[in-house]
Image 1 (cartoon, helix red, strand yellow):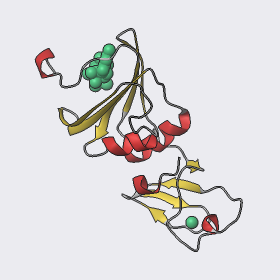
Image 2 (cartoon, protein in one colour):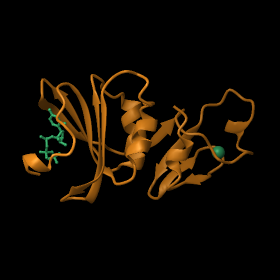
Image 3 (cartoon, helix red, strand yellow):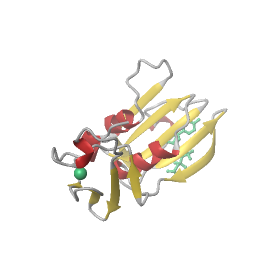
Image 4 (cartoon, helix red, strand yellow):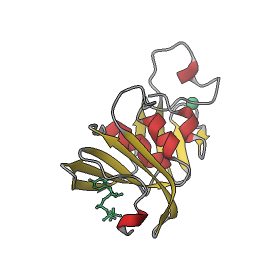
Length: 152
Ligand code: CTP
Ligand code: ZN
């Protein structure tokens, strides 16, 4: 992209989550627990032209890095995402997200009868499968609705 096409300013320090599937940027913010009240700079580009994806979303969070569990959940809704760590305006680290084998304690099960929704001290656990994630306790599968069941 040439300089005059750059839509969202470069950042000095922080994390750029790039190549997010178009339409998922607000879900990315939800996963990171960001609603703007935290005080750090957040820039969001939606439906930005991309060679690789056609259209992509991009999220830039200043002065903040991501935890592995946040990256694990991100990978479920943005499997093509790149996480760029920026320090003093330079990209110092670039990683593609990878889908984990399972996620524990971050998604809620939509099945009301699932034991994880009973009044028991049980952490949710979902196995990552080809077409989504599957509850370890009741086998309910979440597909496109993963973002609506994030519990972090
Ligand atoms: N970026 C930023 N602020 C900086 C440096 C980079 O916001 N100080 C953003 C860029 O706008 C880009 C992403 O971080 O969206 C990755 O930067 P870079 O690796 O320089 O871009 P590309 O080579 O295009 O990345 P890729 O190969 O991953 O597509
Ligand atoms: Zn369940």
